[in-house]
Length: 130
Image 1 (tube, rainbow, N blue to C red):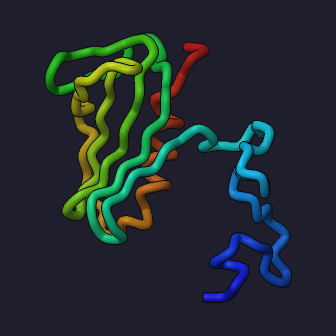
Image 2 (image 1 turned 135 degrees about the horizontal axis):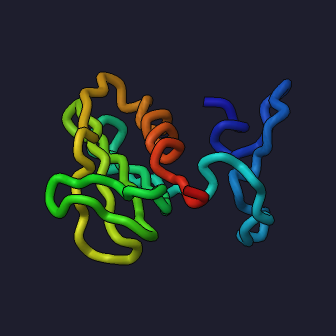
């Protein structure tokens, strides 16, 4: 691995940011309108269970879940990858209980696709304007 990849510095020819959201003194960089900003990632290893979360507000009709039917209002969406499968779950923001999104489970051969699946799920379900 190159030193740039390890330290976060820019490699030759790389024109992207090297700060990864943090400044040298450890404070957060100013907010930017970037798709996916505010998402959180969890992992227990390169090939193991992983998840991504984002706060969403679904449009009229809410999100259908297997356990409790339709949920509406401010929600958190979690996209989980485990055992070759992606599962979407939602919870009321800051609640403890998670509910499986109806029809929200599909096979995913490569866990590297988790970010893309999560981005699509957020784009489809986050409809704060209705």
